[in-house]
Length: 451
Ligand SMILES: Nc1nc2c(ncn2[C@@H]2O[C@H](COP(=O)(O)OP(=O)(O)OP(=O)(O)O)[C@@H](O)[C@H]2O)c(=O)[nH]1
Ligand SMILES: [Mg+2]
Image 1 (tube, helix red, strand yellow):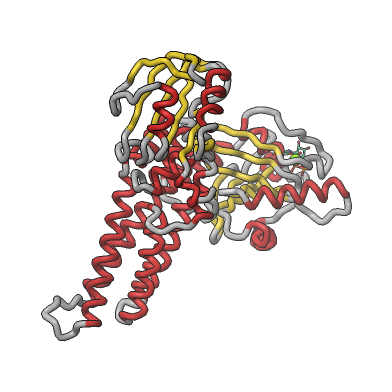
Image 2 (cartoon, rainbow, N blue to C red; image 1 turned 60 degrees about the vertical axis):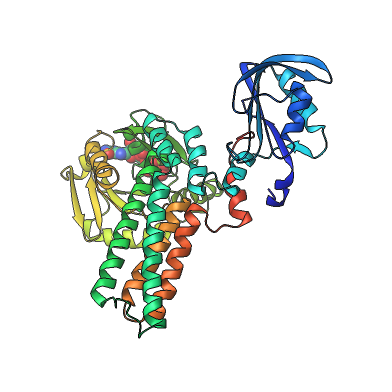
């Protein structure tokens, strides 16, 4: 999308394709009044619903409701027309084609109405993104969160943080530039306490973002391990359904199998993967490649080992071997086949990782796994290391990093100011006070046409 195309007047069918009771065409831009005159033969009262004939080349093609919104009091901030027609594809497509046949009017790109609303400062970037979340929401709870964000609650908190950072920045800058003035000199303690307040508020916002992500996307758990340790048996036991093939032959699973379950209202996406080991088998090799790819998108890994062959002492070795693949994704080790090794069904912590001993075959110890996941992600504020696709989460993490550096350098004012500049930049970029075309493209291209 090219924001220089903003001069054009745009039009689109805003409702889903196919037959429906109502279909809506939206028009936005400086030529909206010309379109209105051509289609309606008159200019209806501003912001009032008017029942009128809709014209196509001087013939009436439909009767419907027209609403004209004078700029700036419209969704996009430009002049806008909404035509509520009967929802037949022929009516809607004919009218749209007719409208875009007028000079300097074209069909809107996906999300272009919302992008114009952003560029005309009717909404900020966070609010714009909440529209797509609201539309795609798959739970009432998440749609409530999205509408709250659309109302500006989250943006307000970001703006307050930006304000706090600005105040601190300007005060310290003035202390450097005008040392002899009557200006109140901030003590080191005051600077630290100001920074702490900002860090705490930013952390709190990031927690909120994290919870929203969990509510929206669920948690992705990937089961990995060497062949034949019981990964597929565990997968079947967790989802409560014999989906994966289980055999005593190592290398049974090749494709990644995925299934969603619901845990206390949160979607848990579980994947079963091919056993990872060195092999010359061509098909298994492909399966292992898929396993490694799946790991990259996990929020949490269940690393399964066979308790009959893997001694507790070897766990560190195994963990360290796998950690090269897993990197910073949190891992829980599952000691399976406890019915054969005669170990107790239990959960323990060994250094940095949890070990849960279970029998997937006898479905024993599954609750320990479910409760562990709930403890980590639903009840507690566990730090997600692996949300790599969420803009707000990544930006807030960057802001927190530079806030921490600011604090470390609280007495070196020049460094402190540099760090605060970064903080301000990141906070500004969340709500779109700073942006580039690529970012807008990325955000708005996910929208539907007409939104
Ligand atoms: N006794 C016992 N056997 C188990 C248990 N879990 C799995 N098995 C057996 O171990 C064998 C391998 O199980 P799978 O679930 O297919 O193992 P996998 O890790 O998915 O194996 P691959 O897909 O080949 O990597 C099967 O014969 C299972 O019945 C368990 O808890 N106890
Ligand atoms: Mg398997």
